[in-house]
Image (spheres, helix red, strand yellow):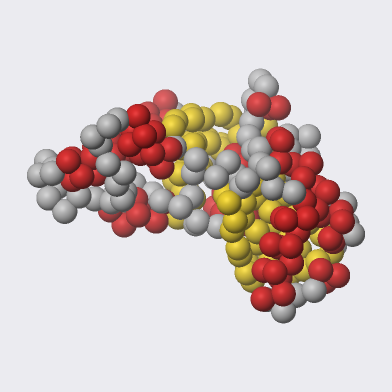
Length: 264
């Protein structure tokens, strides 16, 4: 039997398939664009196609756990889960029995993705964590000894690049990467790459360093996820201690396991 994790983000919806065991190995993962006008049947057919490709029948999926930062899309996903998998979905939010404690004045304001990432980082690495998610938004979540205490939220990199290109007549869309000529670009494209690459690198360094300076008596591990996290790890040695693009999916299974009675 299998456990299916569903991470509904503003840009993409990601599916991860796990064995019903204690390990966190992801057997298969797939992604599709998050379209708010997509019907539950469309989403179900997409997912059944993925599972069929992997040789998995819907009846073999015993549990579906999901997190969502798109409230209008959640009912569609829940209807799809009930109809195609004949099971009640487990939705992650601040009211769940989480493997972390929430020391936060308004816990209902914490995005489900941050709860899941923080749960995964705390479970896997322990201690004091700065969890960075380079997704549609750039989020920093601070976990101290198993307690979520807060963080920072900045604009997402890809959205910023797209917005600048769409709102300016003479600035083209670019690929995000370190410009070959360094920080001083020798063309408009290189200048844009320089501004975004070194600008975002500077933001990451500054926020991480400032979090560390506020409690200089503590040592933090920096755990990063999101599509661009691997690039920053390659280009900025020592900035990120751990990079796991599938951290959110692992967090979904960790939270599912935390709901189960001990010994199960």
